[in-house]
Length: 151
Length: 151
Image (cartoon, rainbow over the protein chains, first blue to last red):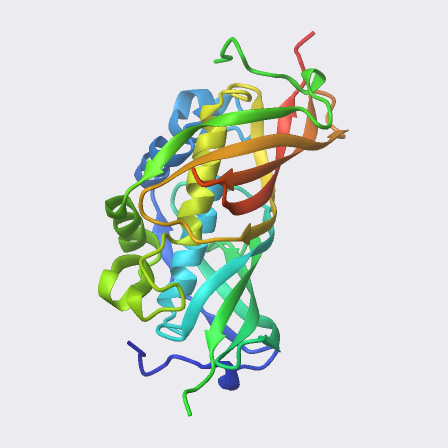
């Protein structure tokens, strides 16, 4: 299952950075996501959103989280070497996701440490999601178990 | 847009608790969610999952997060009074989501404080998601802006 570019725990160091592909978020995708997961008026109703604190339709913060994770995953860096997730820390919605934002994710290895199990390590990865205007929309940190290279 | 049960900032106090409805998570929903958002082998491939550290198919931690939020939202407690989200703190995947788990969410108001804007306050809500065997799968805290009651 390992892709050519996949990294093992031994390949990582604090400060290692990588960049995701980009994705344009349409008004349609904002409304469809919110219909399924977060049906607040300012995520599904263009008219109601005008009188919200945002002034117009915005994407759910959860959509920004999910797209951030998906773009991170699409880097392929940990395909086959990610053994499981431990959680997130400090997910901050800094600016709302807007229709027609093209977003991408700057990823960096924030901390690495061995696990009690000898076949893996614990890695904290900081993710920063920006749009095409360089507005930072979201920051969050993932904690994941990454395999050591088999001996 | 306010539902009869919606609470305003003034209605809240630290320690207030409420409970979500419950939901059964099928194998099919685990695989479909992962196909869209987190296509790791142990989330989409029953055979590959047998040799993962989990021993069998599990749901993405992101699916537990999203279902937790959706069940919380379905309480209706903040329909029309939630003005926007600020982020999450300390999302911890304590046990994996498994096919046929029936999950529900215990919600509690952890902290409340006024905002600089006089029409709203900042509320931290702790969410704890358990299955029908009382295994705790996830804990997380939301930070949300809640409207004050209009004068």
